[in-house]
Image (tube, rainbow, N blue to C red; front, side):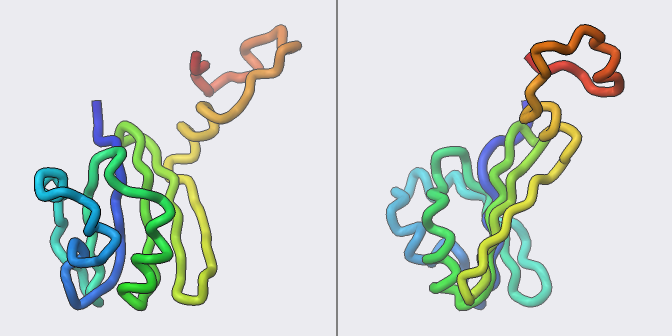
Length: 125
């Protein structure tokens, strides 16, 4: 079983865990947050367990950092829904690993008699 949780990406000169959006986490929960190595331009990544990140916190993170940010909602290391927000309030979303997402989200037609029409795609029950 792979990682399920959130990857929080933001740019700041200060550690992301100092952002007020993380003030509600107790010290035990903060200890489970994994900080990845910073990237050029001040980009930082936090890996947090499921249930730790509140999707409504993205605007507050952008306001605090004064820079765009995004969050990937990862499921079993197989797929992710990434939600981004820029400083003007423009929001975007993108799925990662579209083949798996399509199989999970597509509905199989009720009147489909020949399962071979779905060739190349595994059925998900």
